[in-house]
Image 1 (tube, helix red, strand yellow):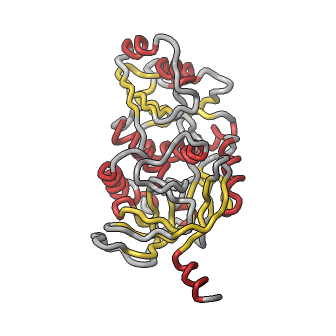
Image 2 (cartoon, helix red, strand yellow; image 1 turned 90 degrees about the vertical axis):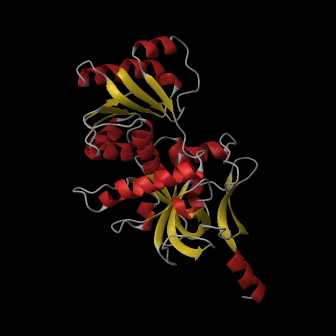
Length: 341
């Protein structure tokens, strides 16, 4: 290998890039350098999120200043420490991070406030499933809905990455998780994770089942990634003074009918939230709270919390991974292996 090739290897990296047609291609691009108060992570793995599918179609651009590369989370080891870093981080330490983008690459530079240590029982591949899904679920439950013990929480897409995280977090705070999913296999898995009840939304009216389960009261909190097509059943499922938390629109953006009137009669609270577009200060506080309140339970709780892994794909097979998510086949998170665990 020539000196020029050796230098290029030190300053470049492989990344999954989106071409003009929306196809995913492996390319060599410049390796990022850590800026002030940033850590450079050599990425072992990332995980798929619905946002990735939207971004590659041009429907969900990254926030200003974020990497154009897909990937909202990553795990790996610290490869470099930027100037001004305040934490006691060490080169080679195993970490995971919440990202605005850039996870589908061999290296990513991250503000130190968004980096977390990997709990000792987890591999780096397992850790890649945590940041986006678990921080989103934690944010929705505690920062937005402010869930309380003994409340009933209806979780749509209960077998998804966020869904399986939410089930465990609801149990952790001594509330009661009820889920919807689109197959008996997914419902069975969600119930094994701790869901008190489950409804196949393709076969049954979930609002009837929720009211039956709660003896007519309804759900105190609804975590809704579906939106439009579920609005009427959501309001029917909602308890008086309940909190309906909307964080996705897989079922459409529009809702026809007496939405506001029915919501008003329930004195319902419609709360909307996204995570990616939040400020660094907000995300840093979320990561700090999650690190203190939840991370210890991945090793100390009996049974411990654990990230649900659906499948793992090599970097060159990322298109197949996307196809699996697009077909709604996954239970839990789909992992993309970038480097060695």
